[in-house]
Image (cartoon, rainbow, N blue to C red; front, side, top):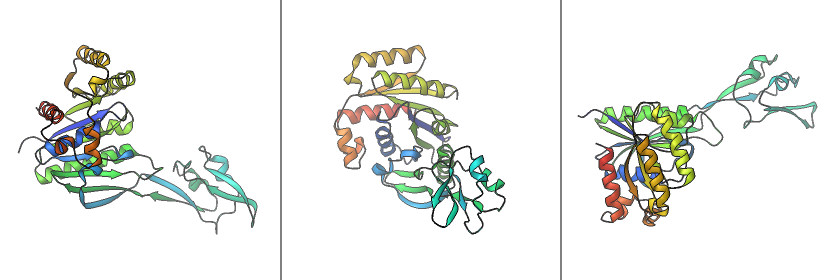
Length: 296
């Protein structure tokens, strides 16, 4: 068995075609483990359709619950809440007004539960988020869903990465493909940590170049090999050349340029990767060549 290799595919902004490219890689590679680390908006499973055989809860934080049989509505918790998550509402049967907690604004800091003189506030775990391990038609897939409104997506990404590595080692698989989230936040950092190579997918626009610079600067801090693919390059050839020049100046390899192709959308509509939908097309040949350069 070869040394386990982790390749992270990322983008500085959303909508560059990153997930479409990962789906193509996932259906071309020799039985890889695919880790969908875009947990805030996971959608790779729509193309790969994994059959999940393992599922687990993810505790993203805690929320405060009031026991109204013990609460005297003194307002001490409301006075000390820094997040304005506690308020007093006028309600029949509550002369002072009813103390309530807004789950959206609550940061789960535990302060209210600690200062409540009646011990009427309890912190309960927020465990609506889930992670999954499954089989798809060409390998293994680890993915997750962060429940709406919940935080700590970086920790959930780390969990997905951990499960992917455990799965690869158990199944003696030597390649992990990581579909990272867009941007440069904590979830993107968690996707890059420990990767052997990073591929950034960009598009030939001013915002595409701006965000590419930001994500490449971040990836550079991890001292890992960096490369770039320019998607829909033929829609703005001048900007494509500008991106290539910048990459050359920064010693970053441009391993491929992909033309605009409506079949990329058609393949997704039919829940297929582009290399499955049109395996003998020119664009599939381009994607296959990019993949061969990526896994060297």
